[in-house]
Length: 506
Image (cartoon, rainbow, N blue to C red; front, side, top):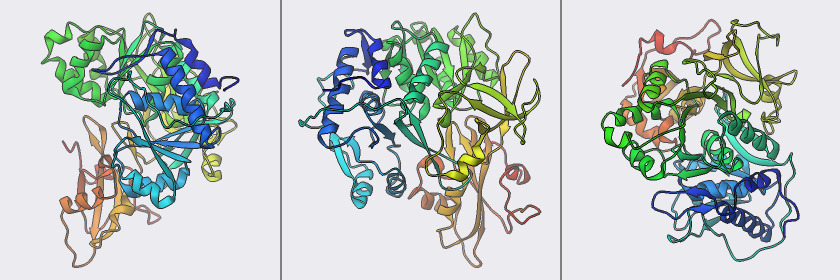
């Protein structure tokens, strides 16, 4: 039996035994007592297979309560590696080879292509066993159990890939201490408590849903309704059934919910949020104002990233002031605006947003170059540009890195370049961000064809879709005789959409 709790496992003691922890539409609730029992049993079952602290378990499950409970169970005993269940086999092969997990968890009867990718690499796949009559989130792996050793504060608890300025995503390890610190930062910022119930619409393979929703709620004894994912047609039905006190989403989700609110006035009257949170992309001030007017509650815009275990800044709850267009005050780590040399900039002076604190990753795995570029005198460079106003509120003014931020989904342009270059008709390609009203940015590609070759934009999109997740496939394909280059001969992504006269592709 476990003799002491890991830092994350200790967080799960916040809720009373009979208080609900996880719910799902049409399912019995899981209590905190049941969640703790599930977590401890999972540790013992994994220990029986020789899997424990320091080992990684990849989780490839659809959004829902089992995704949430398996994340909490794995992260509190070893290291969770959630992967997007929409990836193609080639993408899984890359991520699994990079992460080297001891085990991959899938649904019973799943035909997800991660099975084939894992088999090629000799990685064991296990199906989680569930029953329709079980509480939401209940599962088992196998009957065998052994004594489990808990991880320590500095042991890895979560590992995610983040896109960089090259085609190879960087591996971001986050420790037990990182997750505990971030959970406390977020639950404190939002004043979460046992009275709170979050309607989760975020994907649970992203840092936003995992940390801002699942672990922050659990750390405060609060509960989460684990939906199958964002569905605008179901949002108000779920909200009326579950009576959540809050939800968090990306701006595109809020915009879609507002459209549905206009057609669901009767259901809208039955919903009452304590607050609404927005993160992962800039929230247009007009959307901020409409959310506030429609739901008559504070709208809390926050700023997060994977390397910070999500939250870095947040607008405060009332009676604090929420400033539209600003991502708020420092909300966990210290925030400084530094110039290229690492010198702190005064108020209202633009520079790179840098952070320092207990929620910041200790560094990218096996990537000395990225660590040298990203850390300056203990400060982590976010790659975002912004300034602090006289009240200490942070304004993000642009992206230093070339990564395309498609509604919170980060796309590495070179990964798309490399895929399209595999097509025999393509001679040159440069992938870039195209302004988009709803998503912020959409993926665009400028293509130069090989001499005598011909291919349509639809054919290239279908080709890319065979190996890339749908959100990475270029929505805009432009055929050019020559791609604009800079003075050094490099193809330039930044500003390419403007040079080509491309606006919102909707």
